[in-house]
Amino acid sequence: MSDLYLSHLRNWILKSPPAEWVTRNARELLIGTLKQGPIPRHVAFEMDGNRRFAKNHKIETIEGHHLGFEALARVLEICYKCGVKVVTVYAFSIENFNRPKHEVKGLMAMAKVKLEQLVQHGELLDRYGAGIRVLGERDLIPDDVLPYVDRAIEMTKHNKDAVLNICFPYTSRAEMTSAIKATVDEYTTSPRQPNTPFSQTRISQKIRSNRSKKSDSSLRDSLDSSPEQNDKSEDVDDSMSSTTALDPDSPPLQSIPVKSPKFQNPETITAKTINSHTYTAECPPLDMFIRTSGVTRLSDFMLWQCHEDTQIFFMKCLWPEFDLWNFIPILLEWQWRQKKLNEKESTRK
Image 1 (tube, rainbow, N blue to C red):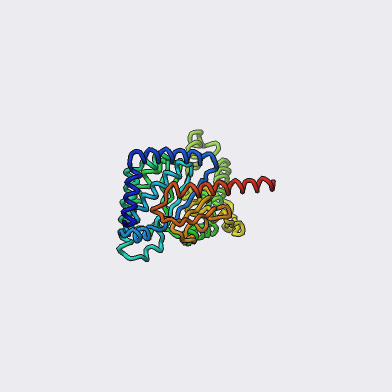
Image 2: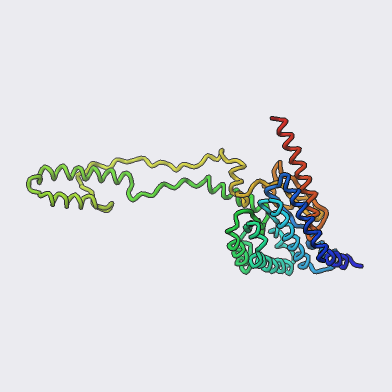
């Protein structure tokens, strides 16, 4: 029997009512037990192995990607149910545009379908209050895909309890380049001066001019002018705009030195400064990085976000095969490492 036939047979058995009841209760029990320990706030998945899975099971490559999306739906429910707040997935690399055109076209068509499914059947995201954010080079997204991206973001923007970051299309080098450019712009742009209707120099000269006029007129016409005329002249004088001609006898305008614009000191740029301009600036630090398919490299994904406390796991299973039973050992090991790390920090104190 072929592997595909065995896979279908296994799925048929697992979907039978008795097996589903046992599996569902076992899942709830395990997840409830895992929640008693520390839970990572931010988990990243590099979903690798869809094409290899399709090749191994002698099915079309696009079908392998479809099965990969089903695996993503399973993983999202597991993570959000466990209490993970942010899930970041590597959906499409900028380098993937170098793949055969028919495959890229198929992936873009699938992206439209899956984003539409997330919008129409978004009970999973709504149940856990997860909002969708698409991270990457928006300019590279085809025009026919952009409306689906915007609709998915718009339809889930009210969800504030959790986040699903979809990196599409994305590479860490592009993200870091964007963050550095934004930092340079921030530090080379002078602060904007507050807008005022008149310059300080013009106001000072106008006041001196008015005082000069009033002193002269008070000596000449104090006896001839009525109170009403005085009020009228004052009203006209006060309402004069900056375009009113100045009195020729007014004191000469004094030059005021123009201050040079002040720029921020580049010596104050830190890693935190650049981090504030990354795509994940509003997300908690990355706690766990998981890659499937047995490949032991990051492949230009979350390079900036991986720090000294990020725990990286390379799994041998292919992404369409990834489920709760693969995630449990990873989460248990992460919890054990966190316990050891906390113990070490407590002894230092």
